[in-house]
Image 1 (tube, helix red, strand yellow):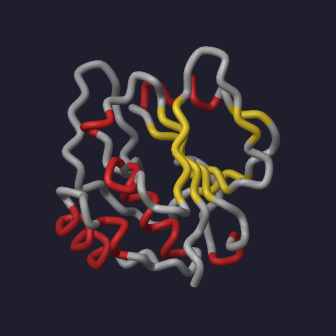
Image 2 (cartoon, rainbow, N blue to C red):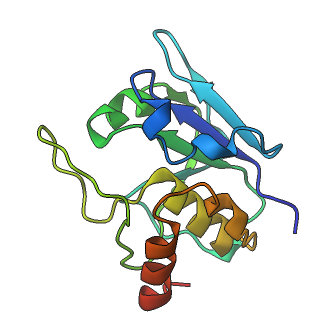
Image 3 (cartoon, rainbow, N blue to C red):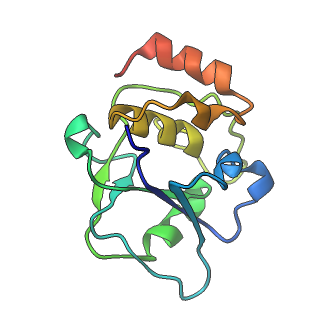
Amino acid sequence: MTPVPTTVIRHHKEKIRKCSLRFLHARPEMTFLRQREGFEFDATGFTLLAVDAPPLSPADAGRPLLLLDSTWRWLPQLLACLRGEPVPRSIPGRLHTAYPRISKVFDDPAAGLASIEALYVARRILGDDDPTLLDGYHWKDAFLAELRASDPL
């Protein structure tokens, strides 16, 4: 299977050293963009991963993925940069992140995954099961154990 083309828009305040996607920058199917003042992105024709959207399924194959990479409190700023008509989809099932989230100012949604976790599961659902996406992820083993236990796919 050809890797699913994926665009990641990262909030300008997101710290790359803490980003779960930082090991994927050299992959040819990945495009990384940085949101800044005045940034806009035409998301028409993309599958936008979102928490409260209809579930992603193999029927969604054929569209590139769009991930918005930020803390949960900055997500509205990234959404405001999107133009056009993306197709919002969520990760089905009840997966829990292995990433140790700690926020003193914002409550994270229970269904929220680390960006790398969401990317891996989404591409797996779309027929592109590539565990090397997780190679640089510190919590890879814990996440794969959670994935096996919940078996949403």
